[in-house]
Image (cartoon, rainbow, N blue to C red):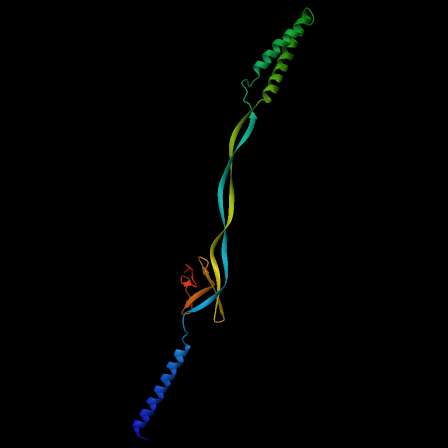
Amino acid sequence: MSKSIIVGSTLAVFGLGGMAFGAWQVQQQPEGPQFADISAVTPVTQTVETPRQVCESVPVSRQAPTRDPHSILGTAAGAVVGGLVGNQIGGGSGRKIATVAGVVGGGYAGREIQRNIESGQTVTTTEQRCQTVTDTQQQTVGYDVVWHYDGVTRTARLDQAPDGDRVLLEEGQPQWDVVVGGQQTTNT
């Protein structure tokens, strides 16, 4: 066989093989944009606790401060009244004993009466009492989005929920910020 026939046949085989491979590649490329279906969008939340202080005015009753802590006024008044009453009893030295007994008994009684009266006196004031309470709320921190394409299911976490039910794919990756079906998502 001649050398030119061998070279020509070899070039023809490679040429036909290249054309066949090119035709196969053209058939494998999809026509138009590809979309994945969004099957679920689930909010991801976290509990946020915010402490705050709550104050209220509360009436408080206390024993009034005494003007005479030793009960001198009550003792003196009781002694005078007791002495006057004791002086009315008996005569002679009996009258003196009754007067002294009246002074002592009246002084004791006057002191106790003054203490009882003062212990029942109260003063009401208003105090501010504060306590810390915690407000609890759920805050959305993102969205788990489940999407399907070509029999494969995948999940992506986004900052915002997508607005549609399909997402544009470029080289197999979802483009969350592309307008799909008249709706636009702004997640990245």
